[in-house]
Length: 88
Image 1 (tube, rainbow, N blue to C red):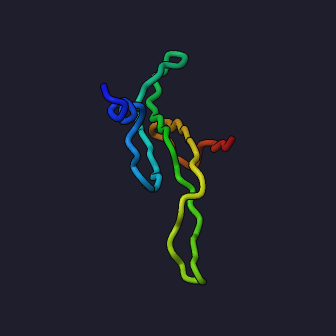
Image 2 (cartoon, rainbow, N blue to C red):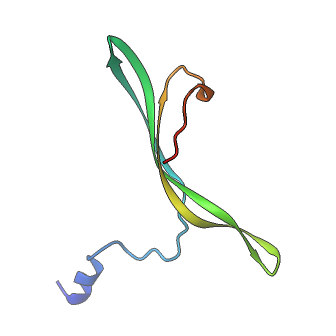
């Protein structure tokens, strides 16, 4: 292997200035608690927080400011408004 080939295989290819995007995965599960089977979904991934961008007073769009890792467990058959939400 040449030095150039070795350098190319050291890590991921340079992708340039690719903006991050939300990346969420949801899976379905069941668990038995005290003899009762509960169906739920688990969602995990990254949410990109963005801020408004302006140049000379003209709106340029939204640019990435931060990335936040999130995890959510949701019991099937329940209203989303009836569950606690925790941010840590």
